[in-house]
Image (tube, rainbow, N blue to C red):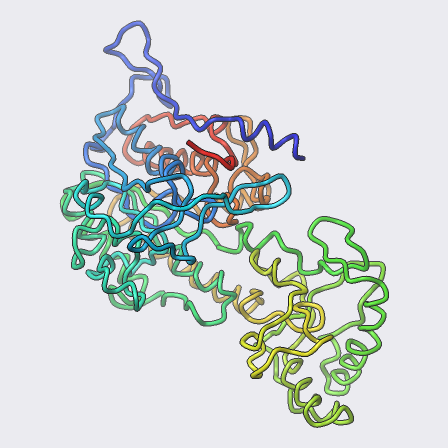
Length: 521
């Protein structure tokens, strides 16, 4: 496998330019073999609005090479072949990633990841990208207004670029960095440039934040309905209505189901084995499994069976893969019953068993374990994790094995349903407004579903959702790889051609890497 990665890392990130024939006046590098045309669109002032996807965020960070490979920048280069103007980007200072706040490193904004042959790890080096840099603001305005972390309603907030709002979370450092002032919304900033054409891909974070926090409630789903700035439908209507108010044409994309990305599809629900056999498995040991069956799983199974909930727990196997132990807050809480059942262990221990295992069960194939949970499996919970005032004692201090993984670690079926219902509602709003405003439309949800289920062939390469090697996603399991962004750009171009009669050709995804190396110039 390492040998394969060596040649993948040697493929340089390039862009496909037009091929001129003998006559400079006739440019033929189009989707139909005819001279290039913009059709009914005017690409002279293209402005892109959105979130991290729009900005080119990849491998867990925003960095210069990633910004260069953003699908929006790839599209802009194609627009230039038919009269498109300059596409200015608020470039970061380096290819390390991360942000400085008045010269100080903020650990919440770390460096990008690279694949070291066995796992994604952070690159070395210190970020040089300062959030409070007047020179960046002065060099604007920027055509790429994508802001990593932005939800739909954030694009309407006049204080989203206000430095004073960073402390309470009402502002975003990526926008503070290039916002003209602390009172201009992203939408107003885009409109100040009088765009003739726009792209809008927003709404992913409105559900993604809930999903990547395991549905624990710390990052709620944006309501599907409500006024502008509150509900998705009102907000999206305000965005599209404003963007088209000056006669601009544009392209919009809907929201993929977040559960189709590697972040939720990589860590198995049943990684516990007697020995470390197979990718992603966690070796528990035969002797430990036998001891757990006798001292924990067996007694729990017996007690839960008495309360009509025996299916929650089964004995561990020494020959097959075993499921993780998780907390399911949707289950009836049997804490009181278990406290009584384990009374012989003493009041304190019995109460502990009741509190910890009252909503515990073993994971099933319908649960999705977060990519970030991989590092938590078998780790010791802290006092904060337990919520009991102290860290769990040994041997009941092993996440996923003797102590249930918590809400933040796993998406359970009820949470997955919430995400799907919200996404469906968002997508109905997006499609309705795309149709009513005459905009090009990209069905990103259908495209991503196909990538996840069977893969899509593009330029003789198969784009799949397999983590690291699938070609579509970067090492954070959420954002696209360089090749993934090129593929997305082509899908946007196809939609634009279909709607406006242009014949842009797009790019060859094979000329784009699937992984960035540790060192980038």
